[in-house]
Amino acid sequence: MIELDGSQHADAQGYDARRTKIIEASGYRVIRFWSSDALRYTDDVLRFIADELASSNASRFDGGEPCQ
Image 1 (cartoon, rainbow, N blue to C red):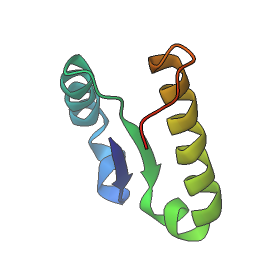
Image 2: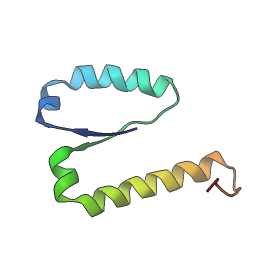
Image 3: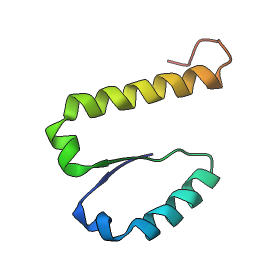
Image 4: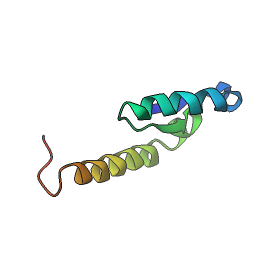
C-alpha cells in the first residue's frame, strides 16, 4: 500500500503506527511519502516504488517469472 501523507500526519504518528500494524498483519506492506515530496520529487518517488515492487516480486516467485 502506498500512502501520501499531508502535514496532519506529523501529529498522528501513533495512529499511523497502529494502522500500519493492522495492514501489515493482513500481508500488505505500507510505504509512506510526504505529499509535498511526492509532488516535488515525483521521479524519485516513482523510482523507489518501482524498485520496491521489483525486489518484492523477485522474492515471491523464487526465481520464476512474475505474472504480467
